[in-house]
Image 1 (cartoon, one colour):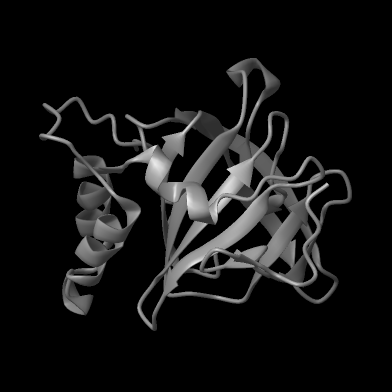
Image 2 (spheres, rainbow, N blue to C red):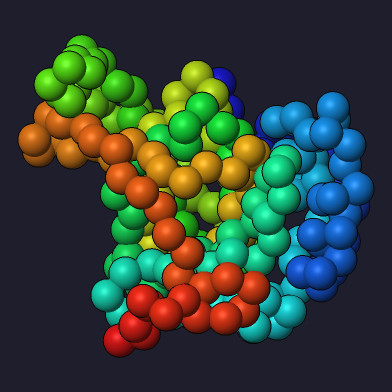
Amino acid sequence: MPTSFDRGARPPAVQRIHIDDWVKKLTAIHEGEFTLTRVEEFIRENQVLPESLAPYLFYTKSHYTRNLIYKCDLFEVIALCWESGHVSRIHNHRDQNCWMAVPIGKLRVQNFRVEARDPVNGKCSLVPTDYYDMDAERPGVVRPEEPVHQVLNLPEFGGRAATLHIYSRPYSSCEIYSIEKGAYSDVPLHYSSEYGKLSPDETLL
Protein backbone atom coordinates (compact mmCIF):
# COMPACT_ATOMS: atom_id res chain seq x y z
CA MET A 1 0.00 0.00 0.00
CA PRO A 2 1.36 3.47 -0.79
CA THR A 3 2.76 5.35 2.19
CA SER A 4 3.01 8.76 0.54
CA PHE A 5 1.02 10.73 -2.00
CA ASP A 6 2.70 9.31 -5.08
CA ARG A 7 -0.18 7.28 -6.48
CA GLY A 8 0.61 7.61 -10.17
CA ALA A 9 -2.23 10.05 -10.74
CA ARG A 10 -1.90 13.46 -12.36
CA PRO A 11 -1.26 15.96 -9.54
CA PRO A 12 -3.90 18.64 -8.89
CA ALA A 13 -3.23 22.35 -9.21
CA VAL A 14 -1.28 23.54 -6.18
CA GLN A 15 -1.87 26.80 -4.31
CA ARG A 16 0.88 28.40 -2.22
CA ILE A 17 -0.71 30.31 0.64
CA HIS A 18 0.02 32.01 3.97
CA ILE A 19 -0.15 29.80 7.06
CA ASP A 20 -3.11 31.84 8.36
CA ASP A 21 -5.09 31.14 5.19
CA TRP A 22 -4.03 27.48 5.31
CA VAL A 23 -5.44 27.13 8.82
CA LYS A 24 -8.64 28.96 7.85
CA LYS A 25 -9.16 26.53 5.00
CA LEU A 26 -8.65 23.61 7.37
CA THR A 27 -11.24 24.98 9.79
CA ALA A 28 -13.71 25.22 6.89
CA ILE A 29 -13.65 21.43 6.46
CA HIS A 30 -16.72 20.07 8.23
CA GLU A 31 -16.08 17.57 11.02
CA GLY A 32 -17.89 14.84 9.12
CA GLU A 33 -15.55 15.39 6.16
CA PHE A 34 -12.35 15.62 8.21
CA THR A 35 -11.25 12.21 6.98
CA LEU A 36 -7.86 10.75 6.15
CA THR A 37 -8.54 11.13 2.41
CA ARG A 38 -10.07 14.62 2.53
CA VAL A 39 -7.27 16.20 4.56
CA GLU A 40 -4.72 14.29 2.49
CA GLU A 41 -6.13 15.99 -0.60
CA PHE A 42 -6.07 19.35 1.15
CA ILE A 43 -2.36 19.29 1.96
CA ARG A 44 -1.53 18.09 -1.54
CA GLU A 45 -3.39 21.02 -3.06
CA ASN A 46 -2.35 23.72 -0.57
CA GLN A 47 1.31 24.45 0.22
CA VAL A 48 2.28 26.88 2.97
CA LEU A 49 4.57 29.75 2.06
CA PRO A 50 7.70 29.10 4.15
CA GLU A 51 8.22 32.76 5.01
CA SER A 52 4.77 32.95 6.61
CA LEU A 53 5.88 30.43 9.24
CA ALA A 54 8.61 32.69 10.67
CA PRO A 55 6.72 33.60 13.90
CA TYR A 56 6.33 29.92 14.79
CA LEU A 57 9.76 28.49 14.03
CA PHE A 58 12.08 27.89 16.98
CA TYR A 59 15.21 25.80 16.43
CA THR A 60 17.61 24.37 18.99
CA LYS A 61 20.68 22.19 18.51
CA SER A 62 19.74 19.66 21.19
CA HIS A 63 16.35 18.44 19.94
CA TYR A 64 13.55 19.10 17.50
CA THR A 65 10.88 21.49 18.77
CA ARG A 66 7.07 21.31 18.77
CA ASN A 67 5.40 24.66 18.14
CA LEU A 68 1.64 25.03 18.44
CA ILE A 69 0.03 27.17 15.74
CA TYR A 70 -3.67 26.32 16.09
CA LYS A 71 -5.82 24.04 18.25
CA CYS A 72 -9.50 23.20 18.53
CA ASP A 73 -11.47 20.14 19.63
CA LEU A 74 -11.24 18.59 16.17
CA PHE A 75 -7.57 19.10 15.31
CA GLU A 76 -4.34 20.92 16.06
CA VAL A 77 -1.59 22.24 13.80
CA ILE A 78 1.99 22.04 15.07
CA ALA A 79 5.21 23.18 13.38
CA LEU A 80 8.14 20.87 14.13
CA CYS A 81 11.61 22.34 13.65
CA TRP A 82 14.49 20.00 12.83
CA GLU A 83 18.17 20.76 12.72
CA SER A 84 20.27 18.52 10.49
CA GLY A 85 20.68 15.14 12.19
CA HIS A 86 17.64 15.41 14.45
CA VAL A 87 15.46 12.30 14.74
CA SER A 88 12.30 11.60 16.67
CA ARG A 89 11.89 8.66 18.95
CA ILE A 90 9.89 5.78 17.52
CA HIS A 91 6.31 6.58 18.48
CA ASN A 92 2.61 6.23 17.77
CA HIS A 93 -0.27 8.75 17.63
CA ARG A 94 -2.83 7.38 20.05
CA ASP A 95 -4.96 6.00 17.19
CA GLN A 96 -5.49 9.54 15.91
CA ASN A 97 -5.01 10.62 12.31
CA CYS A 98 -1.83 12.48 11.41
CA TRP A 99 -0.87 14.36 8.24
CA MET A 100 2.54 15.94 7.56
CA ALA A 101 3.42 18.78 5.19
CA VAL A 102 7.01 19.90 4.67
CA PRO A 103 7.32 23.61 3.78
CA ILE A 104 11.08 23.61 4.48
CA GLY A 105 13.66 20.92 3.81
CA LYS A 106 13.33 17.17 3.52
CA LEU A 107 12.74 14.33 6.00
CA ARG A 108 12.45 10.56 6.05
CA VAL A 109 9.65 8.56 7.67
CA GLN A 110 10.53 5.02 8.75
CA ASN A 111 7.57 2.79 9.57
CA PHE A 112 7.58 -0.13 12.00
CA ARG A 113 5.41 -3.14 12.72
CA VAL A 114 4.83 -3.94 16.40
CA GLU A 115 4.92 -7.63 17.30
CA ALA A 116 4.67 -9.68 20.48
CA ARG A 117 3.27 -6.82 22.58
CA ASP A 118 3.21 -7.49 26.34
CA PRO A 119 1.30 -4.60 27.94
CA VAL A 120 1.73 -5.92 31.48
CA ASN A 121 5.53 -5.67 31.33
CA GLY A 122 5.80 -2.99 28.64
CA LYS A 123 7.64 -5.30 26.26
CA CYS A 124 7.33 -5.62 22.50
CA SER A 125 9.24 -6.47 19.35
CA LEU A 126 9.62 -3.94 16.53
CA VAL A 127 10.23 -4.76 12.88
CA PRO A 128 11.23 -1.97 10.43
CA THR A 129 9.04 -2.06 7.33
CA ASP A 130 8.92 0.56 4.56
CA TYR A 131 10.08 4.18 4.51
CA TYR A 132 9.52 7.25 2.37
CA ASP A 133 10.97 10.75 2.04
CA MET A 134 8.92 13.93 2.39
CA ASP A 135 9.46 17.42 1.01
CA ALA A 136 7.34 20.33 -0.22
CA GLU A 137 6.04 18.33 -3.16
CA ARG A 138 5.62 15.07 -1.26
CA PRO A 139 3.74 15.37 2.03
CA GLY A 140 3.05 12.35 4.22
CA VAL A 141 0.31 10.63 6.17
CA VAL A 142 0.29 8.10 8.97
CA ARG A 143 -1.57 5.01 7.83
CA PRO A 144 -3.85 3.54 10.54
CA GLU A 145 -2.79 -0.01 9.71
CA GLU A 146 0.85 0.81 10.58
CA PRO A 147 0.89 3.86 12.88
CA VAL A 148 4.27 3.39 14.59
CA HIS A 149 7.06 5.36 12.94
CA GLN A 150 10.14 7.56 13.28
CA VAL A 151 10.92 10.87 11.54
CA LEU A 152 14.52 11.64 10.60
CA ASN A 153 16.31 14.70 9.24
CA LEU A 154 19.27 12.79 7.84
CA PRO A 155 22.59 14.67 7.56
CA GLU A 156 22.74 13.88 3.85
CA PHE A 157 19.57 15.94 3.34
CA GLY A 158 21.77 18.98 3.87
CA GLY A 159 20.12 21.29 6.35
CA ARG A 160 17.27 22.40 8.53
CA ALA A 161 13.69 21.33 7.99
CA ALA A 162 10.26 22.37 9.24
CA THR A 163 7.17 20.19 9.11
CA LEU A 164 3.52 21.00 9.68
CA HIS A 165 1.64 18.24 11.52
CA ILE A 166 -2.13 18.02 11.70
CA TYR A 167 -3.37 15.76 14.51
CA SER A 168 -7.02 14.82 14.71
CA ARG A 169 -7.94 14.70 17.42
CA PRO A 170 -5.33 16.42 19.60
CA TYR A 171 -3.68 14.22 22.22
CA SER A 172 -1.34 14.93 25.14
CA SER A 173 0.72 11.72 25.37
CA CYS A 174 1.95 8.92 23.15
CA GLU A 175 3.76 5.61 23.30
CA ILE A 176 7.46 5.51 22.53
CA TYR A 177 9.34 2.36 21.56
CA SER A 178 12.90 1.11 21.95
CA ILE A 179 14.22 -1.52 19.54
CA GLU A 180 17.32 -2.03 21.67
CA LYS A 181 15.37 -2.70 24.89
CA GLY A 182 12.39 -4.39 23.24
CA ALA A 183 10.16 -2.13 25.31
CA TYR A 184 7.62 0.66 25.09
CA SER A 185 6.20 3.21 27.50
CA ASP A 186 3.86 6.16 27.71
CA VAL A 187 5.28 9.70 27.69
CA PRO A 188 3.62 13.13 28.03
CA LEU A 189 3.95 15.63 25.19
CA HIS A 190 4.65 19.34 25.52
CA TYR A 191 4.86 22.38 23.27
CA SER A 192 8.13 24.24 22.83
CA SER A 193 6.09 27.32 21.95
CA GLU A 194 2.42 28.25 21.73
CA TYR A 195 1.06 30.69 19.15
CA GLY A 196 4.50 32.17 18.56
CA LYS A 197 5.48 32.55 22.23
CA LEU A 198 8.28 30.38 23.61
CA SER A 199 7.26 28.16 26.54
CA PRO A 200 8.86 29.14 29.89
CA ASP A 201 10.68 25.81 30.28
CA GLU A 202 12.13 25.77 26.73
CA THR A 203 15.75 26.81 26.24
CA LEU A 204 17.09 27.39 22.75
CA LEU A 205 20.71 26.18 22.88
